[in-house]
Image 1 (cartoon, one colour):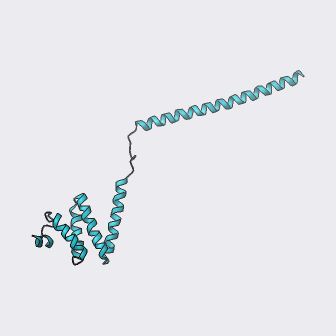
Image 2: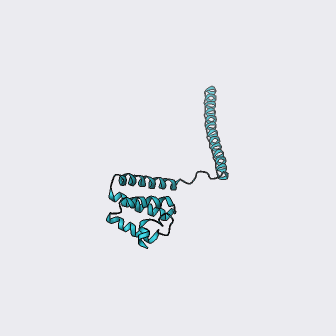
Image 3: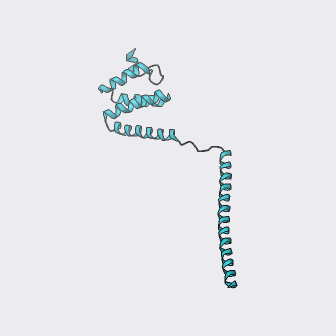
Length: 146
């Protein structure tokens, strides 16, 4: 009977030690994870912010450029509405950026279909706003408008 009791007690002691061992491993792994996370956060907070902001502007510029390319293709094919929309879009882009190339290209597209009724609106816009610019100064819209 004594032998049986000793075996039960030693088995219970082994189970308790096994439980303590697992608990210690769990606590140790949690503490190690917390320390590693803290170190990584510390490095991240002290590093310069590179590439954090998403590139929104280039994406918008790419969409606007693809829209202009589509209008150019359709206007080159003879679509009058695309011609009018492209000229307006280029004049709006010139108003925003001030790039003379946009104004010049807009005038090329306006000249292609100057007989269109909608281009009369564009012609009055050019005469009202852009005749002082060196790209349009000697255009026949501005010379006739004097």
